[in-house]
Amino acid sequence: MRVVIRIVAAACVLLVAPSLFAQEWNRYQNVEDRFAVTAPGPPTTEKTTWKSEYNSMFPATTYRWQQGPNRYTVTIVDYSDSEAIYTANQHSKDFQASMYWQIDILGSVQYAATQYRQKPGVKVTFDAFHYINLVTGHELQLTNPDQSRTYVGIYLHENRLYIFDATVAKGMPPPLIFQQSPEFLDADGNSIRYRTYYFNRVPEPRLGGRGGRGTEAPGATGVPQGAPPGGGGPIQRGRPPQQ
Figure 1 (cartoon, rainbow, N blue to C red):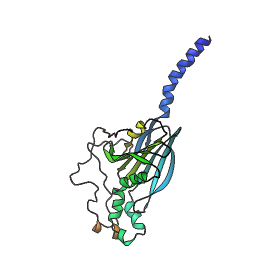
Figure 2: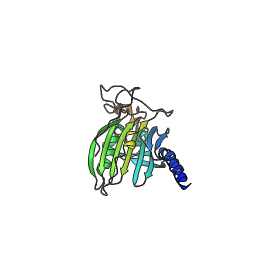
Figure 3: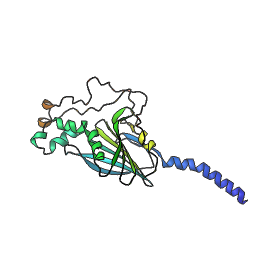
Protein backbone atom coordinates (compact mmCIF):
# COMPACT_ATOMS: atom_id res chain seq x y z
CA MET A 1 0.00 0.00 0.00
CA ARG A 2 2.80 2.41 0.86
CA VAL A 3 4.42 1.75 -2.54
CA VAL A 4 1.16 2.58 -4.32
CA ILE A 5 0.76 5.79 -2.32
CA ARG A 6 4.30 6.87 -3.21
CA ILE A 7 3.71 6.20 -6.90
CA VAL A 8 0.47 8.19 -6.88
CA ALA A 9 2.15 11.05 -5.00
CA ALA A 10 5.04 11.13 -7.47
CA ALA A 11 2.58 11.20 -10.39
CA CYS A 12 0.73 14.12 -8.81
CA VAL A 13 3.99 16.06 -8.45
CA LEU A 14 4.80 15.49 -12.12
CA LEU A 15 1.35 16.72 -13.12
CA VAL A 16 1.37 19.77 -10.87
CA ALA A 17 5.00 20.89 -11.44
CA PRO A 18 4.48 22.18 -15.01
CA SER A 19 1.45 24.15 -13.83
CA LEU A 20 3.43 25.71 -11.00
CA PHE A 21 6.23 26.61 -13.40
CA ALA A 22 3.76 28.22 -15.79
CA GLN A 23 2.34 30.32 -12.97
CA GLU A 24 5.80 31.38 -11.89
CA TRP A 25 6.80 32.91 -15.24
CA ASN A 26 4.07 34.38 -17.40
CA ARG A 27 3.35 37.18 -19.80
CA TYR A 28 2.62 40.41 -17.97
CA GLN A 29 0.70 42.98 -20.01
CA ASN A 30 0.09 46.63 -19.18
CA VAL A 31 -2.13 48.55 -21.58
CA GLU A 32 -1.73 51.89 -19.79
CA ASP A 33 2.05 51.90 -20.33
CA ARG A 34 1.78 49.98 -23.64
CA PHE A 35 4.14 47.06 -22.97
CA ALA A 36 4.25 43.35 -22.22
CA VAL A 37 7.06 41.16 -20.90
CA THR A 38 7.50 37.63 -19.58
CA ALA A 39 8.36 37.81 -15.89
CA PRO A 40 8.05 35.85 -12.62
CA GLY A 41 4.51 36.58 -11.43
CA PRO A 42 2.76 39.92 -10.85
CA PRO A 43 4.95 42.98 -10.23
CA THR A 44 4.95 45.60 -7.54
CA THR A 45 4.41 49.09 -8.96
CA GLU A 46 5.91 52.43 -7.98
CA LYS A 47 5.05 55.85 -9.38
CA THR A 48 8.16 58.01 -9.48
CA THR A 49 9.91 60.74 -11.47
CA TRP A 50 12.84 60.73 -13.87
CA LYS A 51 15.34 63.59 -14.08
CA SER A 52 16.23 64.16 -17.71
CA GLU A 53 19.49 65.28 -19.29
CA TYR A 54 18.28 68.90 -19.23
CA ASN A 55 16.96 68.74 -15.65
CA SER A 56 13.27 68.30 -16.39
CA MET A 57 11.29 65.97 -14.12
CA PHE A 58 9.17 63.48 -16.04
CA PRO A 59 6.52 61.12 -14.69
CA ALA A 60 7.73 57.52 -14.54
CA THR A 61 6.49 54.14 -13.39
CA THR A 62 8.68 51.25 -12.26
CA TYR A 63 7.48 47.64 -12.24
CA ARG A 64 9.49 45.24 -10.05
CA TRP A 65 9.80 41.49 -9.76
CA GLN A 66 11.96 39.47 -7.35
CA GLN A 67 12.81 35.79 -7.71
CA GLY A 68 15.27 34.68 -5.06
CA PRO A 69 18.39 36.81 -5.46
CA ASN A 70 17.44 37.89 -8.97
CA ARG A 71 15.73 41.23 -9.63
CA TYR A 72 13.78 42.37 -12.69
CA THR A 73 12.45 45.86 -13.39
CA VAL A 74 10.73 47.74 -16.17
CA THR A 75 10.82 51.55 -15.93
CA ILE A 76 8.71 53.65 -18.27
CA VAL A 77 9.34 57.40 -18.56
CA ASP A 78 6.64 59.42 -20.28
CA TYR A 79 8.27 62.11 -22.45
CA SER A 80 5.08 62.92 -24.36
CA ASP A 81 4.59 66.25 -22.55
CA SER A 82 8.26 67.23 -22.80
CA GLU A 83 7.63 70.64 -24.36
CA ALA A 84 5.35 71.86 -21.54
CA ILE A 85 7.49 70.36 -18.78
CA TYR A 86 10.71 71.84 -20.16
CA THR A 87 9.15 75.24 -20.82
CA ALA A 88 7.76 75.42 -17.26
CA ASN A 89 11.25 74.97 -15.78
CA GLN A 90 13.75 77.75 -15.27
CA HIS A 91 16.76 77.37 -17.56
CA SER A 92 19.79 79.49 -18.25
CA LYS A 93 19.82 81.54 -21.46
CA ASP A 94 22.03 78.95 -23.14
CA PHE A 95 19.33 76.27 -22.77
CA GLN A 96 16.09 78.11 -23.55
CA ALA A 97 15.73 77.25 -27.24
CA SER A 98 12.92 74.87 -28.17
CA MET A 99 15.41 72.30 -29.43
CA TYR A 100 16.26 71.25 -25.87
CA TRP A 101 12.87 69.72 -25.08
CA GLN A 102 13.23 67.78 -28.32
CA ILE A 103 16.81 66.74 -27.53
CA ASP A 104 15.63 65.56 -24.12
CA ILE A 105 13.50 63.00 -25.98
CA LEU A 106 15.84 62.18 -28.86
CA GLY A 107 18.82 61.63 -26.52
CA SER A 108 16.91 59.82 -23.79
CA VAL A 109 18.18 56.34 -24.68
CA GLN A 110 21.80 57.45 -24.71
CA TYR A 111 21.34 59.43 -21.50
CA ALA A 112 19.80 56.45 -19.70
CA ALA A 113 22.65 54.23 -20.88
CA THR A 114 25.17 56.71 -19.48
CA GLN A 115 23.53 56.43 -16.05
CA TYR A 116 24.38 52.71 -16.04
CA ARG A 117 27.93 53.18 -17.31
CA GLN A 118 28.65 55.67 -14.53
CA LYS A 119 27.48 53.50 -11.63
CA PRO A 120 30.34 53.06 -9.13
CA GLY A 121 32.39 49.90 -9.51
CA VAL A 122 30.62 48.43 -12.54
CA LYS A 123 32.43 46.82 -15.46
CA VAL A 124 30.67 47.17 -18.81
CA THR A 125 31.00 43.98 -20.85
CA PHE A 126 28.57 44.73 -23.68
CA ASP A 127 27.54 48.17 -24.93
CA ALA A 128 25.92 48.52 -28.36
CA PHE A 129 22.92 49.33 -30.53
CA HIS A 130 20.05 46.91 -30.12
CA TYR A 131 16.46 46.42 -31.20
CA ILE A 132 13.49 44.41 -30.05
CA ASN A 133 10.58 43.75 -32.44
CA LEU A 134 12.37 46.24 -34.71
CA VAL A 135 12.04 49.07 -32.17
CA THR A 136 15.54 50.55 -32.02
CA GLY A 137 17.43 51.10 -28.80
CA HIS A 138 20.54 50.14 -26.88
CA GLU A 139 21.68 47.23 -24.74
CA LEU A 140 24.27 46.96 -22.00
CA GLN A 141 25.64 44.13 -19.90
CA LEU A 142 27.50 44.94 -16.70
CA THR A 143 29.32 43.12 -13.94
CA ASN A 144 28.58 44.69 -10.55
CA PRO A 145 30.98 44.95 -7.58
CA ASP A 146 29.31 41.91 -5.92
CA GLN A 147 29.82 39.93 -9.18
CA SER A 148 26.12 39.91 -10.00
CA ARG A 149 25.32 40.66 -13.64
CA THR A 150 22.96 43.34 -14.97
CA TYR A 151 21.40 43.11 -18.43
CA VAL A 152 19.70 46.28 -19.69
CA GLY A 153 17.61 47.00 -22.78
CA ILE A 154 16.61 50.64 -23.41
CA TYR A 155 14.08 51.63 -26.09
CA LEU A 156 12.15 54.74 -27.13
CA HIS A 157 8.67 54.10 -28.51
CA GLU A 158 5.93 56.68 -29.05
CA ASN A 159 7.79 59.13 -26.78
CA ARG A 160 7.97 56.68 -23.91
CA LEU A 161 11.36 55.53 -22.68
CA TYR A 162 11.40 51.84 -21.70
CA ILE A 163 14.20 50.46 -19.51
CA PHE A 164 14.20 46.67 -19.08
CA ASP A 165 16.66 45.77 -16.31
CA ALA A 166 17.48 42.24 -15.10
CA THR A 167 20.12 41.64 -12.41
CA VAL A 168 21.06 38.02 -11.70
CA ALA A 169 23.29 36.69 -8.93
CA LYS A 170 26.86 35.53 -9.50
CA GLY A 171 26.95 32.27 -11.42
CA MET A 172 23.33 32.46 -12.58
CA PRO A 173 22.54 32.14 -16.31
CA PRO A 174 21.62 35.21 -18.39
CA PRO A 175 17.94 36.20 -18.11
CA LEU A 176 17.13 35.42 -21.73
CA ILE A 177 13.36 35.07 -21.27
CA PHE A 178 13.08 38.52 -19.73
CA GLN A 179 15.54 40.07 -22.19
CA GLN A 180 13.96 38.74 -25.36
CA SER A 181 10.25 38.87 -24.51
CA PRO A 182 9.40 42.64 -24.39
CA GLU A 183 6.57 43.76 -26.65
CA PHE A 184 5.07 47.16 -27.40
CA LEU A 185 1.28 47.44 -27.39
CA ASP A 186 -1.31 49.66 -29.02
CA ALA A 187 -4.20 51.30 -27.14
CA ASP A 188 -6.24 48.09 -27.37
CA GLY A 189 -3.47 45.91 -25.93
CA ASN A 190 -2.46 44.35 -29.25
CA SER A 191 1.20 43.68 -29.95
CA ILE A 192 2.65 46.16 -32.44
CA ARG A 193 4.54 44.69 -35.38
CA TYR A 194 6.80 46.67 -37.73
CA ARG A 195 8.00 45.72 -41.20
CA THR A 196 11.24 47.64 -40.77
CA TYR A 197 13.17 49.51 -38.10
CA TYR A 198 11.19 51.93 -35.95
CA PHE A 199 12.61 55.34 -35.01
CA ASN A 200 10.72 57.54 -32.58
CA ARG A 201 9.13 60.81 -33.69
CA VAL A 202 8.98 63.71 -31.22
CA PRO A 203 5.59 65.40 -30.68
CA GLU A 204 4.62 68.40 -32.79
CA PRO A 205 5.43 71.72 -31.03
CA ARG A 206 2.31 73.28 -29.51
CA LEU A 207 3.52 76.20 -27.40
CA GLY A 208 4.71 79.66 -28.40
CA GLY A 209 7.91 81.38 -27.27
CA ARG A 210 10.62 78.96 -26.23
CA GLY A 211 8.59 75.98 -27.46
CA GLY A 212 7.28 77.52 -30.69
CA ARG A 213 7.80 76.37 -34.24
CA GLY A 214 10.02 79.33 -35.12
CA THR A 215 13.04 77.80 -33.37
CA GLU A 216 12.46 74.16 -34.17
CA ALA A 217 15.58 72.05 -34.24
CA PRO A 218 16.66 70.51 -37.52
CA GLY A 219 15.54 66.92 -37.84
CA ALA A 220 12.85 67.41 -35.18
CA THR A 221 10.83 64.47 -36.45
CA GLY A 222 13.37 62.12 -34.90
CA VAL A 223 13.62 60.12 -38.13
CA PRO A 224 16.78 60.44 -40.23
CA GLN A 225 16.27 61.43 -43.86
CA GLY A 226 15.71 58.34 -45.95
CA ALA A 227 14.67 56.21 -42.98
CA PRO A 228 12.02 53.65 -43.94
CA PRO A 229 8.47 54.01 -42.58
CA GLY A 230 7.02 51.63 -40.00
CA GLY A 231 4.23 49.14 -40.62
CA GLY A 232 2.96 45.65 -39.91
CA GLY A 233 5.21 42.64 -40.35
CA PRO A 234 6.86 39.68 -38.67
CA ILE A 235 8.72 39.86 -35.35
CA GLN A 236 12.47 40.12 -35.50
CA ARG A 237 14.77 40.48 -32.55
CA GLY A 238 18.40 41.47 -32.16
CA ARG A 239 20.42 39.37 -29.76
CA PRO A 240 23.90 40.38 -28.54
CA PRO A 241 26.52 37.83 -27.52
CA GLN A 242 25.98 36.64 -23.94
CA GLN A 243 28.89 37.11 -21.58
